[in-house]
Image 1: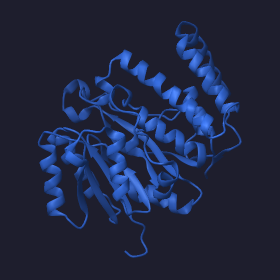
Image 2 (image 1 turned 90 degrees about the vertical axis):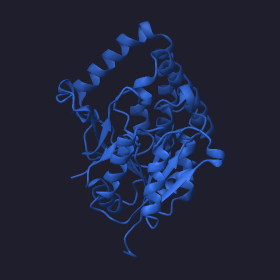
Image 3 (image 1 turned 135 degrees about the horizontal axis):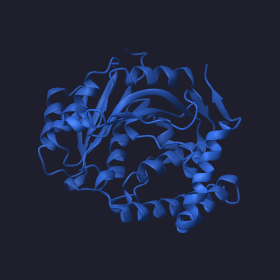
Image 4 (image 1 turned 45 degrees about the vertical axis):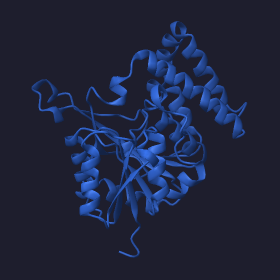
Length: 311
């Protein structure tokens, strides 16, 4: 195994139900690729999930590490993922939320793509929105696989993918579908810890993607490698519309400042962001404009030259 790349898997958790965290951990153990280390990072939990994480760390000390913040603090998902990154020894990092699960070939297939394309900084795939875990009859037919909105199996050069995200032209990836090179996270400074509380809902992930997409090519795969569990206690489901609106505006303000610091002020992506901020603040006008945009994109079916289709 000495020549096999090591993948560091990071599972942050906070008061996760026992069933969920066990299934997440077991989906790592079920991977066909075996050269991984697992960090279970406790964000100040008060429930049984901490004991479950410690149990796995005690039973598999050569593979599993339990981490927590000093004083068992609750510091948010960004700081918790960063704590895992600080301890990771792998050349590659893979993130798994404690209520999601991976399919068995996730690491093997993503690693094969990443090692064959050294220019790529990050890879992600489609996600299965997973309702049927509940075993409720009405949920059995609700599972669906998220479509990207762009051609699958492409390498997208910076900063075009971020421009797609800003415009809503492609779906935002679920963090559990992502694999990234460790050196990429070192270059961009990991997850931005300003996003927590009401501002944490999904935008800490988007801020991370934004920093990657500004500097590194990203491989967008047509494969589905994980199940994204849908339940009422998740961050996204629990957030109110007002919280989501406030968090989105905070993210756009953060992104504008970040683009300015990185020398993008006045560029095409800067203008795109400014126009989207205007549409967000003027929603009565912005909604019909965005509907027309999406109609045109669907009819055109064209993509920039820096989107490279992989045969």
